[in-house]
Length: 425
Image (cartoon, rainbow, N blue to C red; front, side, top):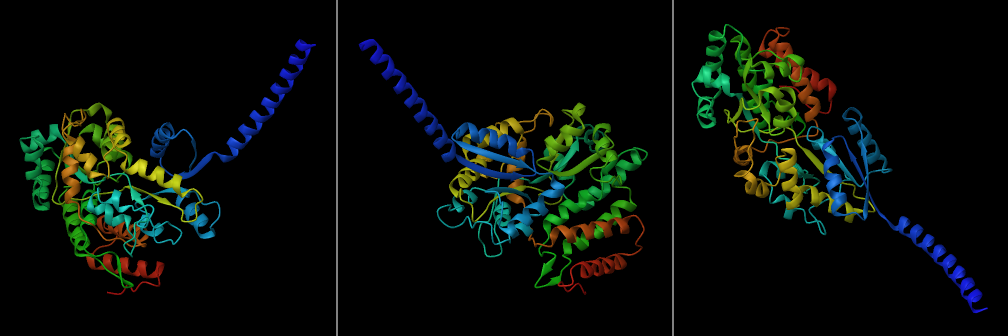
């Protein structure tokens, strides 16, 4: 009787245990912390993977949307206020437009106090992160100062040196670059050019504007852009640039073939442009400073102001932009130059690149980042830049005959597309 009683009791207790266990699992699943993130870039996958290792109790729903559809989908859900992700990534091209939307969290205020993070960043990134009122609306995790990537073999042949400091001195002005371009194309019989495209001039000049496209509702063409017209026209007429289309097949092939000496590109150009398109040229490249400091690209992370998971969202944003352990791992494993100049400086003496013949590229970009000017932005930049580039191509290819006519057509198209802007001269 005792044995039978114990057996019965055991069965009852076991069943009760299973029931309670099931309830506990169900409750745990319901209470699990979930963070929803939208992104257009594969870069986020690495960060999310490392974040989940650090915080295994947080479930992350990462949705990847192709860049062509991403911005419109993001704007749509923000305007509707429905199905908005807790955190979302925005490329620099669209950031001036997105950051003005009221439903982005103001990260300057408590409990975020984002200036504790932004104060450690390069000044030009800090300025981009803020809206018109000076509030931090997103955090940049990537540093994007630029360099003149150069072929060391071509520099040695035509300039007599491949030393980065000496090459920097030889290309410290546009006049010097033009002279080198004429020399190189002549001595090579037209097979080698100093620059790949007129975009090598544009990327520098557009970073050095003093005034944005639109000021008080009026279209402004900054002097740096006017100078660009003259510089690109001279480069085209003197065969200083190779007339390649940026990101086109001839442009990428030239990196492997060694038909261009200089390419003006940002930090991320190392892994995503040069190593990707010219893997067999490792050791043949170097970094030099050009006529002016510049930057290009970058991505920002923002938070939905009505998110129910702001604590998780902020934890992820802090992790990606300022966690020393993760940041150093990101830099070393992904060749990733950071927005946090304090951590960049710590790595400057350590990180070298075999592709760049052992050059200390973090040291180079850390110094370059300090010199990058803060180019003003407007929500119209992406669209007006497209119009400018189109008219520039028409002008350089002879479809528009004079600079005056190019500027007139540019103003006309801006006024047509944006009637709220006074595009008259």
